[in-house]
Image 1 (cartoon, rainbow, N blue to C red):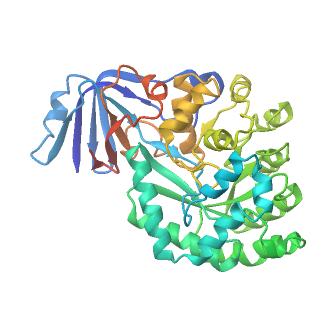
Image 2 (image 1 turned 120 degrees about the horizontal axis):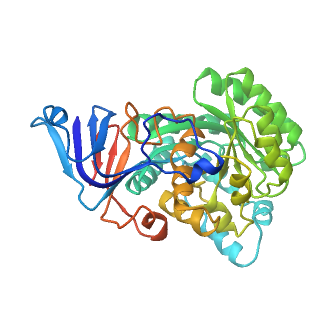
Length: 418
């Protein structure tokens, strides 16, 4: 398919020389082209520039070329959501009521809620039911501008159900136009039957789950919930080491509930990202500086659970990169709306719009291992973009929270919505 978008009010996140990520002061730089055009051939971005469209480009316009007049509108690279749990069975609004009554996340978990509740529901659901529910969620986030998404397992908590989840994710990779990355999160919580035998569950993750996941090639990455009340640094170390032997690079939950040591063990294993980071101090920032690990913040979870907000300003001022993702899941962040994440970045983390846009595009693409082909407008990259409704400035995107500003969605060079 061939698409030519003309009269673009502003083309956002343009790269002449693509970068893997942006960090520190560079996060405040957002390259754009006003009064622009964008040419897409097949599934790739072919060219772009300032209006008028060059004669050489117009020569390639044919009756099969879709020409879109984007007057008054902007074109963004699709959001990359680098942390979700969107394969799950049913919702958990009853726990939401418990939360309103004053119960903490950990208290709800001890009562049989939380991750263990989702595990039971997932066990009872068929793969077909899980695929159907997840496709609906993927369609929802696609319409709001997400073009690439990471999906974790972790609601299985036993060998067969973890494999079931990962098979569902593999099915979604073939059924959805979104780019989907799969992460194995066998160590998400300790099943009730292993309450006093946590070491045995860790052994099962290492000796049974990881080899099977690797053998069936079901995951791109491995994850562990390294935090107070979940998995210790020593257990996380063992699991990540085992995953590394099978070629699974780490992407871990860290420091959501306390200064857990999760960031340090993540950096030790060259984790692609460490996620949550509500508890991040000078020691953690120092550890991250100079590493290849992307600090990833999940505003939805902190907002929904009324937790501390990660010290993003301090992290950026220290020279770190920051990515932002939705943490879409039924218990602590029941939304995959990356436009809302973009708004939260500015409202709650005091990020400038330019920093926030970098955090949900190029840096979150890096946190999925995809920044070579996704996360910006660059020649040769995958043509995942969205055209906004008429908006006055790109800062309007985070400013006007709650409304969907995306009007037309292009994924893999195809107009899929609008």
